[in-house]
Length: 456
Ligand code: AMP
Image 1 (cartoon, rainbow, N blue to C red):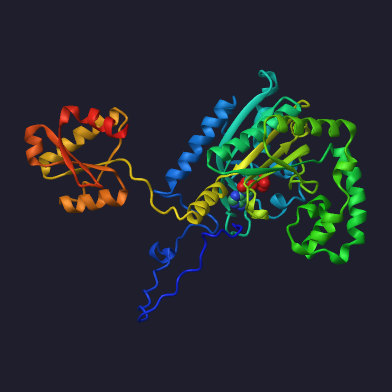
Image 2: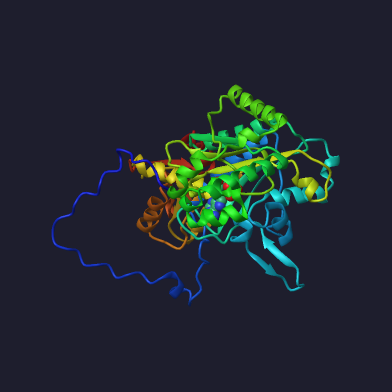
């Protein structure tokens, strides 16, 4: 992620003294697994970092529930035609990035590159237009795009998103933007919302005629990629992050001048609601989003102070009032957004680095046992604590106290419970403060209460 330089990022101090011997290069993981490695652009989510991942999911669930959204899960695999028809054949996601294959029955399968089309399909499949309207759903799951992997861009990534289906109203768009904005805030990220309106399909067709005329007149100044886009999907030229295209895009006719009165009024109302909700936004006349199904409001969220670049958007979304009808359902107003979880995690980690926050706060408990009897008793004690909602780590593979305290230190726990032969016989247990080394003896029957006190 390209970040604005902070004063905290000083150059590394020069090292003096005799040159250290070079460490022997580690064997690549693929060698260790007899040539089988994770696929390019896909990664394992491992502890302890996975705790942040779970925390974000918890925050997503909490805020989406508070805004009245119910959880939806659709399959990761769908008929490829769902995405091709909904997103548009000439969009980058479909044209270049989709995983498409034939299954054993000869069905053309697509791994979902995003979730809106699948949710619209589910809306039609389950006759959700007969449910109380609007239907408000949130999701969390893996998406797949065969893109060129780089920082912030993976081939499997996770999105948290929300959709409101069955209502066309500016307040819906404002509520979705507020939800996305406050989710990021809950994650500790201050964001800016970029917002635009791309009008109805008819507005857009008329605008595109004007845009193509303009782009043709500037063709020689455009990057090779934009020259191609100009023919296949001219709106996407406005999305270009190539420096070479900057001047041409800045001077381009603006879609807002082609909006129908209805779309203009709708957009103004969205902005009024955002003002009311005190959501900071920036009008971005060149924001079009990459997919065909969008109509009217479109938006993207960026971390404040982080330079805008294609792989820096934390999330985005918009209105898609024609999609459900297009998939065979009744005319249904709908809007939604999605946020890339890896980008949010990347932003948090970058900020922690900038602030020099390396030390994790200590917390949690570890149970060390000495001897066979103590091991058995430890299992019983841990079971009791677990039932009371208290999780205790252990390392039964180690038998010496020293080795177990080392494990406890590595886990960063605040206290270790020590159970030796004497304690088993007395019905007591030691609680050791890992920072001060002070130990207190506690009756095993009162252990839960003692731990709860420490947790408080
Ligand atoms: P999009 O609908 O393509 O704008 O995607 C919504 C959000 O998903 C983006 O703002 C990113 O945060 C995230 N995202 C999209 N593509 C990728 C990717 N290849 N790798 C990681 N995150 C992605």
